[in-house]
Length: 115
Length: 114
Image 1 (cartoon, each protein chain N blue to C red):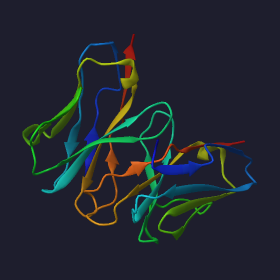
Image 2 (tube, helix red, strand yellow):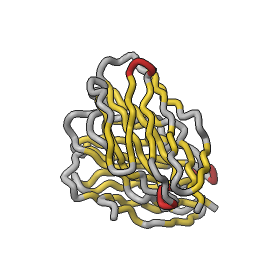
Image 3 (cartoon, rainbow over the protein chains, first blue to last red):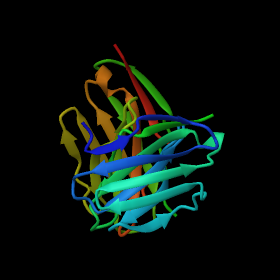
């Protein structure tokens, strides 16, 4: 079983809906990540939080809004998404120190479909 | 700029065959880290191994082995006596010291047929 838990596993939403993806880890990690993965492609980094502060935003459209309420939780708020946003959204976490060296641990992902 | 190339898009072998997945990387950094991840159909990326740029020792873990050669900028992954459960997409990735961003290769889809 993965130590990074993502909910929901599947989400279907219309373009006018507002929904949120949730991610939780209890490994004491202080860095958390959101990735987007399209079929047959590698994951693409969206956001990174380090010690609950946003450290990287890979020029993601504002219809995606991340939030890190505490060191164990990471949310991704979705609003007015487009059909091309349909993808697998992966959350990951890693130790906050020794950046680059620490492996990232991934959740199972949320499969998002935009109608 | 950093880059990871996995030239093999898809590999299909029969169970019990040995199979090697190739990974070639580009970086100007002297300190960097290489990773392999496995992504089964369930979606989760499973961390398999990390290699530091200053440690060229090969590693073996059960049926898995990794060959790191700085001279050819390669970090290849071999599965011995493959099993159906090894079927997955495998990603090689690179990160620089101090960075939180992983540079992924395009992945190799491995299918092990019974």
